Image (cartoon, rainbow, N blue to C red; front, side, top):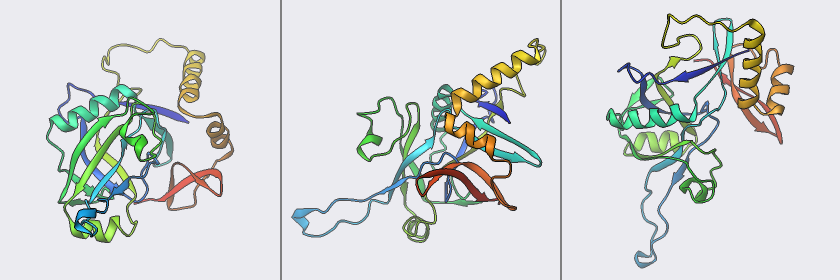
Length: 239
């Protein structure tokens, strides 16, 4: 199955992340957590909720399953692309751009904190037991929309973040379109195998080889999830 690295074309003003979506099934398979104020003893009452969501916005080298018609493939972002995309998102002033399940624009959500994880022990994510790899783009989003908070966050209808934007296809769209690919088919196959082993674990490779139709009609596979202690396809309804 083809694996495509998506890159940020810094020369293209339309390339980059336009919005952050809150979704039920994040393709990066990382859920956010809802942060609340602790009890203030001097007030002898529980403070109001902060209404802040913290979670991974983009994970480097995370294979994300995609299907376009009959074509099935995986995409991923390198650590360098994750870093550049996070910086361009802020430089473009898109902190308030938010959607619900990639379908509806919503107001009142703002990215108020953004950082790249650089340390497994001392990073803020470790404090909240969020196990994400080095190079992950982390963020906290302030929710000043009571309907979204009460009807979607508190009810568990949304569980994580997903990004929206445009990226270049490194395999299909090299920067110098005049350069011919001189690699032999054997070389291409060898490089593809190297790509796969760098992105997937051995267990995931074996599971992908076993699965021909991992999801039923009307659903698509977006990575994996844990069920009853076993890794299984994460089947999400096609919207």
